[in-house]
Image 1 (spheres, protein in one colour):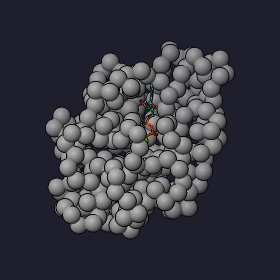
Image 2 (tube, protein in one colour):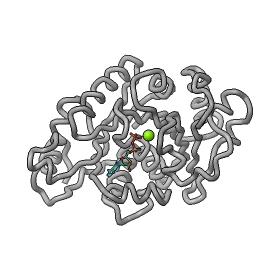
Image 3 (cartoon, protein in one colour):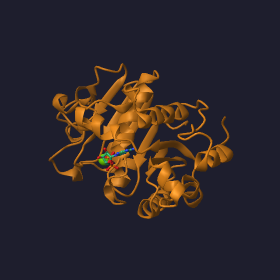
Image 4 (cartoon, rainbow, N blue to C red):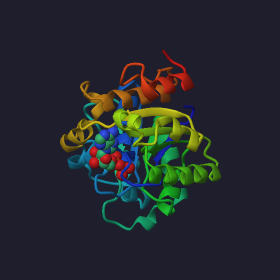
Length: 267
Ligand SMILES: Nc1ncnc2c1ncn2[C@@H]1O[C@H](COP(=O)(O)OP(=O)(O)O)[C@@H](O)[C@H]1O
Ligand SMILES: [Mg+2]
């Protein structure tokens, strides 16, 4: 992706935005980029918790906006991965302080003055002001979707809103895929999701209980080689960097994975 400021969004909550932001951000840093992951969502499982950095948060985004600290001081450096930084969300204070123009200025400062290669923005659920603020600085988006009707419907609305805001470089991250269910016809197949939404996938992530385990221990999945979702998220980061990574088969050359290969090429 050309976009250096990328919003991770979905419309629907609980589909995997924070998981995607944490892991793709970690993976991009692991691959050599200087990355800031920015939390605009004040949810149950915040980005700082998922990344295992919550004990090191001192200042947050609103502190920066309201001038209580410098941007540099609010950034939490991840000691495990060179080049990875978190800008935390305000847990308590009034979210009204966070308006699109101010947020845009902060992201610009990260990219133009602080030397970041990439800024990943974890957006709140919904299509209200929180979404608009999160998307304001973005040049591209990862639209996270689960293979179910309500998620696809919300993703469709979000894609329309991204386009209305002039954000052009948008890709799908299809999360929580269960091949057996797709085969039985219980889930919307990957190819259906792609066709309905009309965006190309950049990540296809399987259902994997290691996601919850990694959140509980605060260690990003992409740092664990034993996780199928972790591998898929690392591949997503490689595609964002422009590498040609074929979509792998989770179950040897059968079913919809064969269809994915037919549609998008690859071995
Ligand atoms: N691929 C996956 N496999 C299993 N569980 C997942 C997967 N992706 C996300 N989850 C779980 O779903 C829940 C919501 O994920 P989260 O990233 O917080 O979503 P959001 O930020 O969109 O609200 C979390 O409990 C997370 O562990
Ligand atoms: Mg979240």
